[in-house]
Amino acid sequence: MRKTSPTTYRVGSIGDFAAWTKRVIGDPRAARDHPKKWVDSEATAARAAADQVSAEAMVKLLSPGNLAVLDAIKRHRPASVRELAALTGRKEASLSRTLKRFAQVGIVAFEDGPRRARIPALVATRVHLDIDLTVHHCSVAIVGPT
Image (cartoon, rainbow, N blue to C red):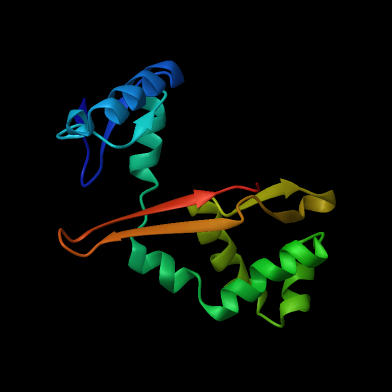
């Protein structure tokens, strides 16, 4: 077990996780002082730690205007950032910064289009915020299409 700030995690296979879950169901005290997050490798854990985003930053990112951008991507599937800017009435430079941040947190990805166009694609449909008000700890989970 290794600790990263502020999240603890454990590396293991899905079988390891299933076995641990069965133990905890039988004896909930077995979960005390054990990490609640499991990853498949140290590389995944390092990526997740680097990609940490605060709940506050996520709430700011998911402003009504930015949610309208995500809705436009979902509804219209624009062929470029320029087309998305026209659809949303946003300036292309500002929109590019917003899309870059969405890509950093795993909500949007870019595909290569013709003539160096970047095609924004929605890769997550849900964001889960877990805020523990007693220990000042928050976590954010980005969830892809279900």
